[in-house]
Length: 291
Image 1 (cartoon, helix red, strand yellow):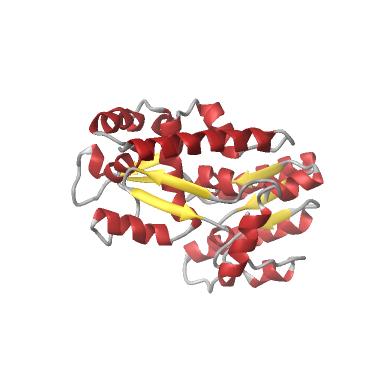
Image 2 (image 1 turned 135 degrees about the vertical axis):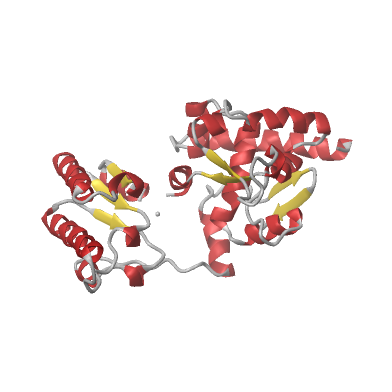
């Protein structure tokens, strides 16, 4: 790394630190900072998280990662790419590699996941791909906390993997516990990827279809009985059962913003006195976000 690049990185680091300090003065919670404090994450850990988070913000990063890795099928960053992006030297790369061993905070607490090509089992660490866990994505970006905060209510985020069961009657029991607990605390229920649970009832051809329809009917009944607020988020609204759609008080569509809207969003998220030009520098990638 040249002396000029290192100087630019040092200047940028000081600028970011100053902006963080200014942001926290009004009492604003910086979620990435809270995540780092809770799990004792290092600066390298946060860089890894941000690189893995990028495709969740803009799918064009999938194409960028595929291009950088020379394989159109590798749309998630491999460990080798991630370490190259954050490491200015071989020594730094070897040191950063320790942040992705099983005992590291990122893997120990399941903040990111490692997965390999099924056709190449027991492949070396550098060839494995990284994906940020969905619950961390929701925590950093979440489509519901703002509404709950404005209303002064608790927000219950429903983990569908812990609700849906292959055993008959277990899904209904899990849903019953959730609605009973939410009713006593007057909490907001938030179902992400709602089409998985609120899907359309189908024609009964076998016992599986019959029990799936029973689950949807039971959920519809509990939704009608619940006196609090329920938020459903989905990318496949057409897959929701019509009975749920008819009972919605509000249905809000969030189309992908065009260039003008993205510029307006970028300008509005910062305080008026905040400089709006940022330079992100990595040893092998230079990216500008400018006014």
